[in-house]
Amino acid sequence: MSNEQTKSANAPSSSNFLRAIIESDLKAGTYRRAGMPEVITRFPPEPNGYLHIGHAKSICLNFGLARDYAGRCHMRFDDTNPTKEEQEFVDTILDSVRWLGFTWEHQGEAHLHYASDYFGRLYEMAEYLITAGHAYVDSQSAEDMAKNRGNFSEPGKNSPFRDRPPAESLDLFRRMKAGEFRDGEHVLRAKIDMASPNMNMRDPAIFRIRHAHHHRTGDKWCVYPMYDYTHPISDALEKITHSICTLEFQDHRPFYDWILARLAEGGYFDQPTLPHQHEFARLNLTYAITSKRRLLQMVEEGIVDGWDDPRLATIVGIRRRGFTPESVQLFCERIGVAKADGWIDMSILEGSLRDDLDPKAPRAVAVLRPLKLILDNFPEGETVECSAPVHPHFPERGNRTFPISRELWIEQEDFMESPVKGYFRLFPGNRVRLRYGYVIECTSVDKDANGNVVAVHANYFADSKSGTEGSANYKVKGNIHWVSAEHAVEAEVRLYDRLFTDPQPDAGGKDFLAAINPQSKEVITAYLESGMDKAMPEDRYQFERHGYFVADHEDSKPGKPVFNRIVTLRDSWGK
Ligand code: ATP
Ligand code: MG
Image 1 (cartoon, rainbow, N blue to C red):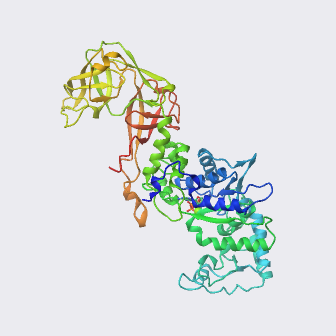
Image 2 (image 1 turned 135 degrees about the horizontal axis):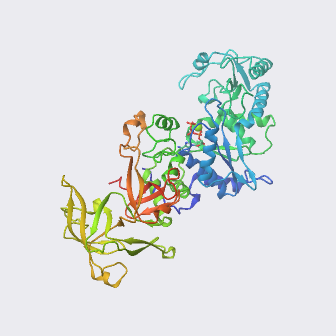
Image 3 (image 1 turned 120 degrees about the vertical axis):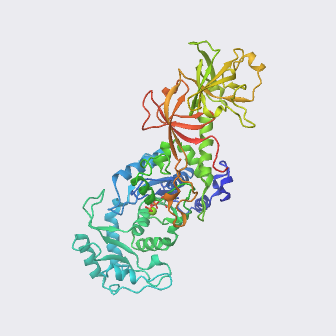
């Protein structure tokens, strides 16, 4: 574990290397241009899946830096791969970014972009590169191209087509665009250096033939630009200043700079300073899977209940689980930004969640594993009103009230017929306080034919009510929660836990499916404090002694809430 986990949420925010870079650029005026912010970042997902917690880090980083330095952040879809992308993904990605609390609007202008909007310009620039001798159409077979690329220890070999005259390449490229060739028959490559130690500089492909329908441009194109070519150009066209990406793109940076430099020579960009790529370590979170491919597999094989299964680290999943956007932002601040890959412990995410929810969440009582308690000396048919603070630390939020009556529900684990040593809760002959109610003394139990306890009997002390003078005369060690059986709200509650038993379920080629936690979801019927039937979808509560719960936004109906456990009160995994 890195020591990032001990970093306080209030640590000065300039403590990350990206902020240091931006601050030095601001000081030097690197990107000072009339009428433009000096910091323009972008979040550039490919619309080929759902976003996950790793993307949240990138979103918080890019949008957060723009916010903190009076800049703007563009939302851009890197939609250069027609066969894997869909409008459905575009919509959910936009939704997730908005939910996290960010906007791509700046001074009344929406900076929502699509790489596909640049297809025309990307094509023109490619023609320019051919004319200027920086690109050529290669007609080798895919196998020959791969073979001639060499490997880490061997330099590549020039293609026999590398020196074909620009006019010939241009003619072929135009015919590629006109649809005269099949997929893979020709490819446009940058002309750089087949002997470069950096494989990405060995004449990378920049346009390829793909007879495929694109979710935005339809059938207009049958040649599509490659990601590595599209990305830097999109950045430059949008006048991005700091292009922040994950470490695996470090080796792509020389090409990023090369392509922008060639096009700048051609007069394509009017800004004096081109965007610069900076890399940071991607987020790896323990007990979570963030690979799109594996997420898809779990959804398709029915291992989870869809993309928004509350156990998944997708943004739609953690939202349904009950995470707040603020808790995710807090988490991203706490983990900071590193330059080397590492693992972040799930407990940091859960800790951020608890820290965010604790002051916000109103309290309520819920009995999750009910056991009947009968107060034999409590008058039948009568009720007495009890009251409790909505939030113990904020008296100004007022009180809630609920009735106590003769028959109650208590937690099974708050009763033991034969108590173990140190057990202070209810057992025959012992006294406990019913939270916000009375002190009671256990008298007997009812059992079924198999000897299981089905009800517990007790007497209550009428002068012991919490908040009255008499209550001070009773000293008890145990304090248990309860709801009145007649007044309780019956509700489905889903107890979620971590999806995996292994902290790094897919590291080192492990079969992550073998590490599925069989107890990651349990559905129970619980009894909630009266009034909880009014909970609205996405209302969050602390169920006292249990943890934080949210009314499920899909399945909760008016008067009939369904709750998801967001997180327990304390981390029980480390112990
Ligand atoms: P793919 O494998 O499909 O490329 P991806 O996770 O890289 O998946 P993108 O849509 O390309 O997905 O990612 C959008 C942005 O989010 C990129 O800038 C990428 O670097 C960043 N990103 C993706 N995963 C993480 C992660 N685990 N931590 C931090 N940033 C991430
Ligand atoms: Mg990617």
